[in-house]
Image 1 (cartoon, helix red, strand yellow):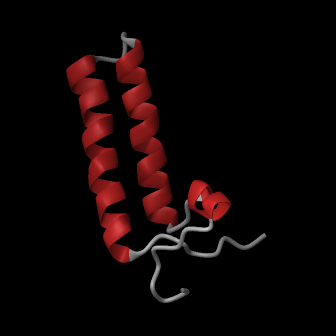
Image 2: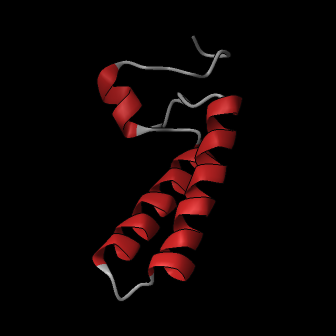
Image 3: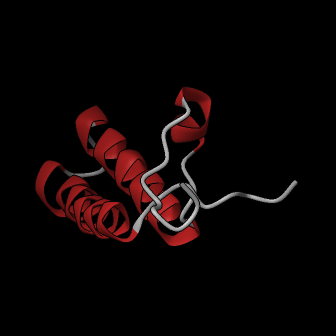
Amino acid sequence: MALVKNVGSTDKLIRLVAGAILAAWGILGAGLASTIGILAVIVGIVFIATGLLNFCPIFKMLGINSNSSTS
């Protein structure tokens, strides 16, 4: 099954930056000993992964496409 790119360039940049901030805060700020820190790292990794893959499964389920080249 091929992943159809549904994440555009602006959306990708936002996901990568937000993911990096969340992951860093989860590790350095909240700490991995806390539940909120672990959740922040997990959400950050998901944001980074969807940004790098240019594919968001939630967007697919909702029929959203921020990638203007495939709209």
